[in-house]
Length: 120
Image (cartoon, rainbow, N blue to C red):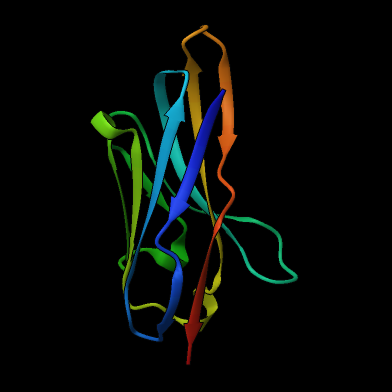
């Protein structure tokens, strides 16, 4: 079993910053691509950012220049630094990871989400 636990969400004013974290734990052999997704009310879940095992990154256009994704492989932790937040960034943010378990099984794992609220 592998678990992802997000933290760092909260209420922030427009223009402010938040830093999300996602800690992976359990029967982990290796973690590959890790990513962030978000889901606003009455909208579908959408891709936000990802980072590969060798630190290549990709972002959705709407967050480029404002968000920075990073990871600490030694601690199996993913981060998302969010700056210049806008009301339209408000959503539940979910962590996702592709994991090779200690039993050499590939797992796609999701966290439970953390709520980001941006006031205008």
